[in-house]
Image 1: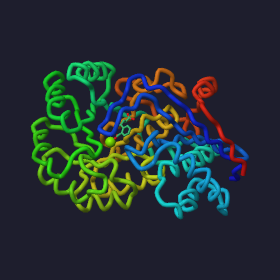
Image 2 (image 1 turned 180 degrees about the vertical axis):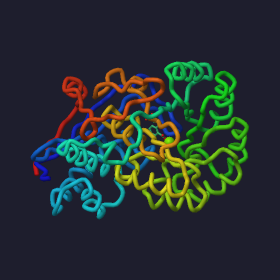
Image 3 (image 1 turned 120 degrees about the vertical axis):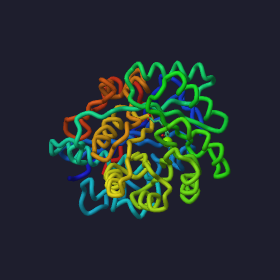
Length: 367
Ligand code: OSB
Ligand code: MG
């Protein structure tokens, strides 16, 4: 494969409702799209970095900068080009996994489209559809929360995840349990707690949650291991897991009983599959996280979520949970599931009129 050039495209997508977490409130998604053009095909990658460095150190503007300044030139200089060569060509540059993931995904998409092979098949997927959960933001009242959760359960979602933070944890969980009974329920703290909050977090034990996601600082593996000994809710890591190596370390230390896999966070779908494999080998269930992706990123996440070790419903919600108009043909929930795209590569592409409408800037880097 030969790269003719790479397009960096910024799109602004209004969310159907503000999404509040312990690290901030998102009302629009400021997305960087990477499109690679080869002699025979083109491929897309969605960068999941957010507009500010609040979930991770990366942010959209920085991702665009590191791509144009370092990553794309390094890839252009690589002796051979295919998706498996992208990671090694970019390893001299520390971090910036979301930017690297977007570039690798675009190359992988182009390569698979050229060969007429679906991403799901390439990754080792074993299901044609995947059960879906939904991530519910922090609300201004319990009533508002119950309305939102009720709507999602009615839509068919197979699992509810509540965002929590100090001051919004035991009461919302209790309210959801009281109103909706024994529905599959989990919580995500996005690092909002301290090791000294262990006794408080143990108050969630009686509610039979599937898991608590990333209660402590992302670097605090030992703290998570200690917390796991003091609460009965299984501890799941998100922010802490940046590679197959950190996944292995977290599992060995007893810091993660369950792992949230987000391809952007770990540098791409190939590393995401390695994490899946490490977790399967250790008997640790994984599930596919989300970053409020458009249909492009969602297509790839749904393909990944169809691998055999993905034993819990993912944050792979339908298009209408995020956007009134998605960038691709919408993903629609059927019986609580999304279909795994079966076409070559990602199996979806941006709708040209929508893409034109939401784009705010494009930059062509000829190689
Ligand atoms: O921690 O899982 C998270 C969204 C943005 C950043 C971090 C997270 C999330 C979500 C939403 O929980 C998942 C989704 O529906 O895409
Ligand atoms: Mg999370």
